[in-house]
Length: 123
Image (cartoon, rainbow, N blue to C red; front, side, top):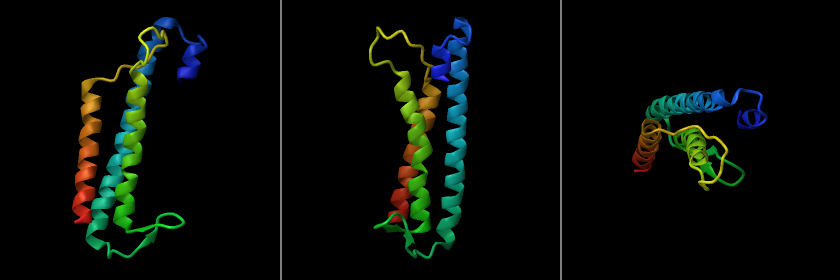
């Protein structure tokens, strides 16, 4: 979307609101993916027999451990987007979506919850 907005396909006044909508949709999608992984990992905890599952070529994990690891991916995606919204250079004229406090606190809460679940699973 950023690329399309830079090509002046949309009227300049509509670019900032459009980026905001896309940013919110990205966040909702990330939250939905996180919710799915959360539900699956909580359901897996009760039946996981701690049998190793192949994680990659050399590493193994339990099914629940793999689901807990995967919970970070959608959150990292939205955190990268939040970092992109913060201009590195104040002279940069490229428009960015605004990351509000509610979105930042929602992502932070989900990261902390994931850390807490992962720690409790390890213990």
